[in-house]
Length: 157
Figure 1 (tube, one colour):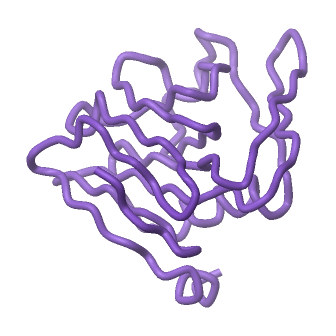
Figure 2: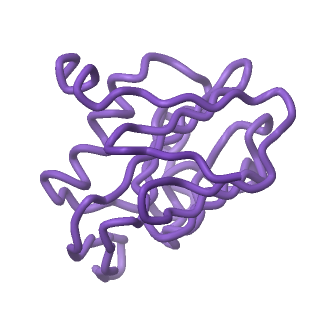
């Protein structure tokens, strides 16, 4: 199903978690930092930047993380697979033309940007950025989809 964005954020909410996504809005190189290397991937304007909150929480941190990436070009940091700090990430970010949610990956340790850690209730969801909107595939039956107005969200920041 295709959902229009018109500059807003798209919010997919489960009963206890959420995923927030917005277009990258520009073509730029996103750097990904791992313990061993740095690599960069190109984002196009209709690609997505998404933030996942596997335990839920307020939207503001998710909005800020998306803005750090798409407006300020802050690099993403990927921890080593068994890093003890990974369990403390309450919000996670991923960016690319298509994003898949998974509850089978360790938070903050997956360098491939097509995957983002989610709760089990939103696992298997696929978001694909398209001009003017987002295609959603495998939306769980209990999940809701809504738009978060960008202008309202910038007042939060």
